[in-house]
Image (cartoon, rainbow, N blue to C red; front, side, top):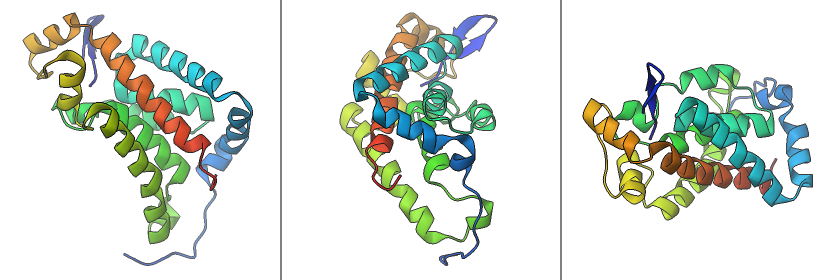
Length: 202
């Protein structure tokens, strides 16, 4: 679920490579921030993430960008190009498909667990990246019944909206879209952060 903005108004090779490359998370300071976050009380970390989500949602009204941005800032991930790339992805182009609150954290997981251009034939690394991603999707489904935007809308609003339709978009806004969607984003970001914090492989 995302809220678009217009005129200042809410609109809603299975082989393993021996090549190596520098880790984006190493260069970004991820390891250092991970240590700092693990040293803090977990609920403090979660509260900080909640605040980051709320600020980003109030500014952007965009679940995918806001969920990624909160994790990007909390864990010092690379991200400007990722944030830009997330622009059209909530509900996959607002078609009621995968919720942006899932897409954003999965992009963060890609930066943490993923393989780069020199490792694109590293099948093992690809398979390893699916473990935290699968955990997140399973937890999100347990909380909201689905990872699909239309299904999540039914849980939060009692109905789904076709957000590419201007009239339904207006109804979505009037139903409290930012508040309801922010709640979804906060929960998804907390799930993602906990997976990272508790991962002994990091």
